[in-house]
Image (cartoon, rainbow, N blue to C red):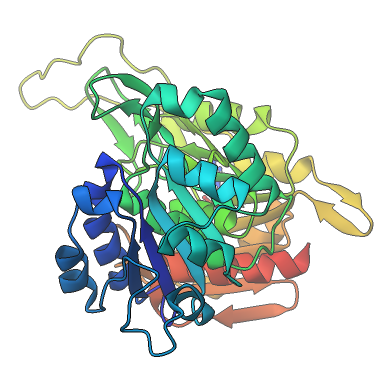
Length: 403
Ligand code: C5P
């Protein structure tokens, strides 16, 4: 799935060492289906050449407002007219100051002043330049003018110092641009999500768990942030990066056992939607051994199980009705080996929740693809087989209508 299909992006490059990452950014934007038109400042060309950017994007690169290749000689007007957004990465302190004042003394700054499309900046500079009162004034002023700031992040800098001012990674910038274009169906809403498996210890080195990569739950977290929500993600043991972490719109709590997941979930109180996507172990071990259980020939140890708390059931008990709508709106998930619709719907009723989503087929474990059966009190609807992120966006659309 290409999330920037048919989008025309003007990619501005200003002078900063982070420009060495801009060619990679251009490639990622194009992989997502965008067409990329690069505009560079004079200083940017000290770090990366127009030839590089042209070879990667397949489009001529513009560096001067006097460029005679534009038929009417008005590059500053022509280049942005058909663009869906101007993205500048890196955006230097100098460029930010210029844009906040409305100065227009080269092609890129003139283009920004003359634009009729959104402008997003990925600042990149030394930490003292970022912290300087003048830069902070520019950042605040630009945001007041409706300009989006992607980052910066904190970390190791090319100058050898560590601090705020690092440009976001090209993947993070791409993901945030994708998010920017999604409809804000959950603006102002808070979403709680459990994801991944749980792990129930037998002893310090062994345990039992469920199949679950966490991909579906993490995709829902990403889609919810894209839709404008704030997300609390409670994740069992899985090796996935927190989606859209650089937006600051997501907090992640890592847990291991079902008991821990239950405690972390029930600690949260203020949210509008709950997606119980985690594959929670139904049983834990009654008395996990503190020491590793030693093998004794062919003798097998007897394990006593105890039932784990049902997280979704307990959250469903806290639901209140506001203006005729249940808060939080609870969405369960079900993986079944037979009669998915019957079992899933029975589960929905037993847990007292308005919606349950069945995973069609077992090959979905660990895969990027899935197919869903979405069941509510009015009936069921099967989705097409698609990437989990695409399905997550569909699900967010459906749930957004419900609340
Ligand atoms: O009860 P069962 O595990 O079959 O139902 C699956 C749904 O219930 C999923 O949404 C899952 O996240 C949730 N669940 C839970 N706590 C449990 C067991 C399942 O939240 N202990």
